[in-house]
Length: 188
Image (cartoon, rainbow, N blue to C red; front, side, top):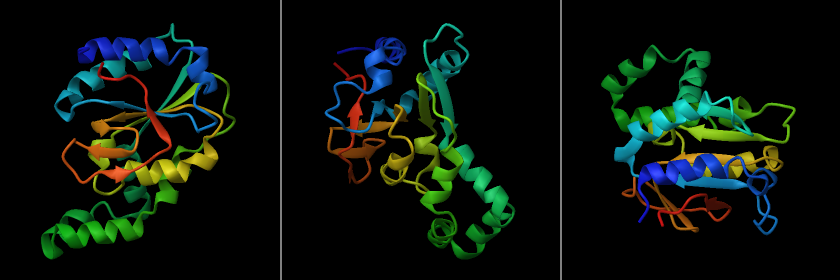
């Protein structure tokens, strides 16, 4: 079985390959790849990503988007940041979650992710998947993103398991069906 560091090194090489950048070998599916890892390894993955994002020798351009930071920016734009702790204390976490889910739609996340023009070599890198849970579920976001990112690879750093059919965040939660993604580097 490969170590996490071996898999991360393999990821660094893989994202620069023409086949990955062009989406070859995916049977005309969208180029969405998941790099799955144990949530307990989050710090190691974050350190790797900080090095990767500053690597000037890469043959690709990483467009890094932290989903939790996007969530916070949407809350800030809606002017609700200050009210969130008070609402949770007064009405409870479940009520707060329902209010946030009704106020912040998936389309708002997609709009924050969109940019143009996409150029060959761009890779949309999604992080913060575990941090944004339960406010946003990544399988729902990926479904909504497909029409806007079909011409470029999307790489999701996923703290959980994906078996090709179901995504299981933190390898503990109820799995969600999702069939359009591929594991980028297996655990081998």
